[in-house]
Length: 225
Image 1 (tube, rainbow, N blue to C red):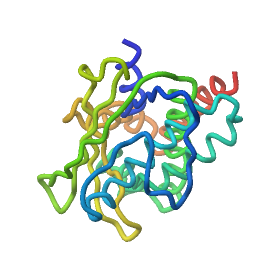
Image 2: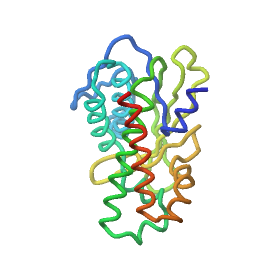
Image 3: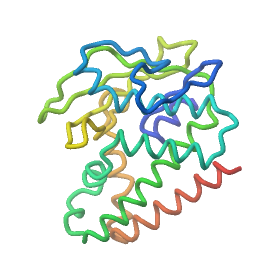
Image 4: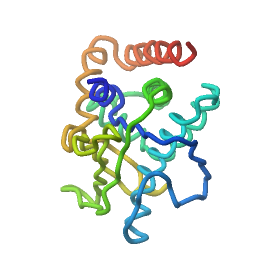
C-alpha cells in the first residue's frame, strides 16, 4: 500500500483529510485537527508531535504554497521538534565520536536537509487521510524519556490505522523527539543505521554526506516538478 511505503520513507506518515487550510500560529497551542487532552505537563511533552502534525497537515492543504516557502516552514518545525544531533549520533553509531567538529557539522547539515526534503516530498502532494494523538503520555524504559502514541491511517478507515509512536527526551531547549517507533516498536534510528552503515564503512562521513546530498537533490527535483 502507498500508505505503508510512505511510513518507510518518512518514519511517520500522517495524511490528514480536511477541506480547508489549517492556520499555523507560533503561539497557538490549540491545534487542529489534532485532539489533545491531558495535563499541562503532558501537553507540553506532546507539543513537538502536535507541531509536526500541524505543519504536515498545512502542507497537504495548501496546494498553492510555493515549494520553497513550504520547505522553510517545515524546516523550522522539524528543527524545533527533533533533536537532530542526538538522532544523528545514534544513527551513525560508534564512528560518530571519532569525527571532527567540522565533520559533525557538515554531516548534521546534510542529514537535516535530507530529512526536510524527504518529508516535504512525501507529504506535500498527498491528500486525504487522518491521524490521532492518544491522550496518555507513557514512561519509556530508560532515562526519563517519554512515549507519545499516535495512530495514522486513511481517514475513512481509522480502525486499520498504523501505530506510530514517538520517543521524547527533555533537553535544555525543551522536549524533543529522539526516535520514531514504526508499528509501535520498530526504531527509525535502527532502520537508518542499517541503511547508512555500508556507506559509512566504505566512505566515512564524507561518503554519507555525499549520499545524503544526492538523495536530497533527488527529492528536490520531485518537489519542483
